[in-house]
Image (cartoon, rainbow, N blue to C red; front, side, top):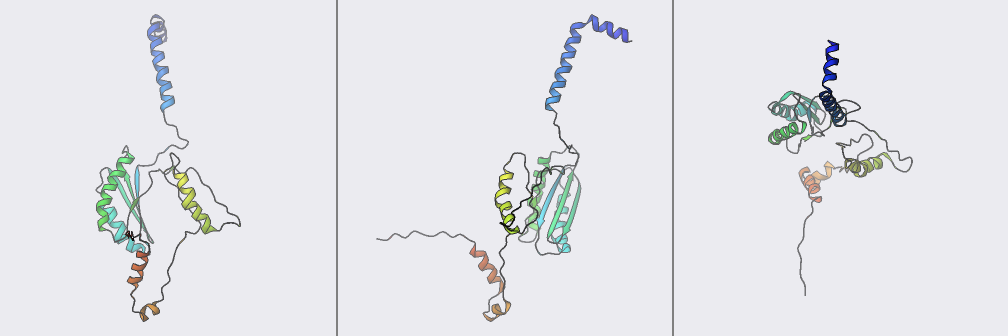
Length: 224
């Protein structure tokens, strides 16, 4: 058998050379066009819905946020598993799709159903989609050290308002997650006794705070 193969190769040198060139070209093309990852992505195609419901217990979050979202996401095409998790003030819904589903197509379908089910959620609750990254996409960590010059609140502000946006502008970066530090907040402490003395309901205080952040245009007055 081997002798016949060698004899056929010798008698058909031109065809063998063409066949060898085709194989070499195919090998070079595959070598330069096959994506190579340090850690191959074997995770499922999934879309995450993150929802904040501040100050609410896990059971309330489950009944008013997680359950409506999971019920609606069961109808998403090619979704094989829908999981919902409720925490204090937080809700996570994971939609896992069938293998071979395009990630961006899946995100667009989830967004369509999300726009529909958002009307059934409590007022002020806005669900958002997680980043279009995989479970093996965590590639870099860094720490801000301000020494004695900056405290934890100042370092968190620098991270959230300066470094975060610069890093997100780098091609290929899907998300920059901030962990630690103290987020800057403005808190208003209300004295219920004084409100009762002046007959001011708490709703008026809330409305006044809301209106204080509005920008209102003015008119032009021509004189002379």
